[in-house]
Image (tube, rainbow, N blue to C red; front, side, top):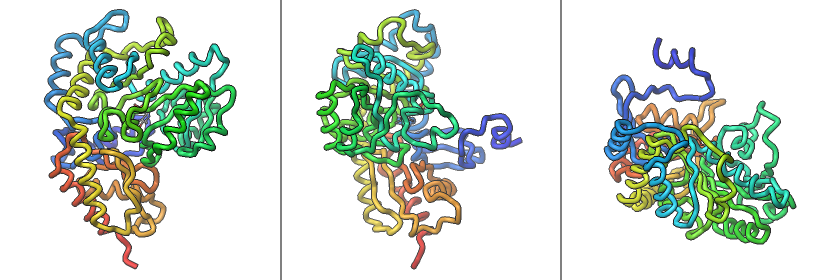
Length: 406
Ligand SMILES: *Cc1c(COP(=O)(O)O)cnc(C)c1O
């Protein structure tokens, strides 16, 4: 049996996968079983921030695995305390505290629990989230996610969410009731098609939150830790923005499973002893790994590279003046290329973004679909100028090959 056949027989078939088995990676490249190289502009979906097998990451994992891997949260460990300090002091730069989880969905569940706790005194529990959002797949995070296709067949959902259109302040205002306790949003909706929140909307949301004593919860799971060319995704939209709670995962571990959430100091007492927990959350191996990743992002000033590569990508793609591309959305290296499917030769019944991704894979470039008409580019934060040149040449060639001549 091939790996793919074995997967089909023994692994629950919850994912639509591309027909590629990856066996190893180095930097911005991965290799398949036959030794063929692919340029990786997927990065494990915005997760391998430093590319594959970065020496700082491998060293941190090896050393910590040889020292102490796990001991539970019944005791204190140095990597956990140090990573929390690093995130509060160097990333958020506002007083607060961190809870460590293992994924993005769990981090969002923690923020949902924070909101519930905050609302006890005033008898409020409703959280407003936004159309096309994505917050994860647990019952809580899935219910927060305003996409019918994620909910289908799993009802009744966890109660207390209201969905509002993104970037529509009047609608947001109208959505607020006497039960509203929090807003939960992504600075840039990644899975939903790479749609950014606007500066005006974020400013208006902050005003409403202050007026009505509503918590602002930011889902930085995909946009956080340098991905947007800023350490915080919201800084790409509104520099100096302050949230009451922030969730992360993906890029913070460089591929190692870890997530966390921040609670502003004034609310930190709400989640005291016994209120929340995780057996694995914040274990020394995960924290030593994430500490190496976050330190490397900061010390090597990767946000500067992210901004330069974003500019390079925008200039190059704009210079093609291709009828197949409608626009480039997003910030930093969380970019969505809007596809004009009417100008593309897409076989009957195929989704444009998925079809193009499959063609690019065939040509040696890994990318990610985001909704039916958007191609997402998520290269590692340390991707080189030359690698971008190479990747975009493949994209241009494939798009040209698929362009309908009328
Ligand atoms: C991926 C993602 C999640 C879910 O993270 P998991 O680690 O898969 O649970 C939540 N929010 C956003 C914005 C994401 O992109």
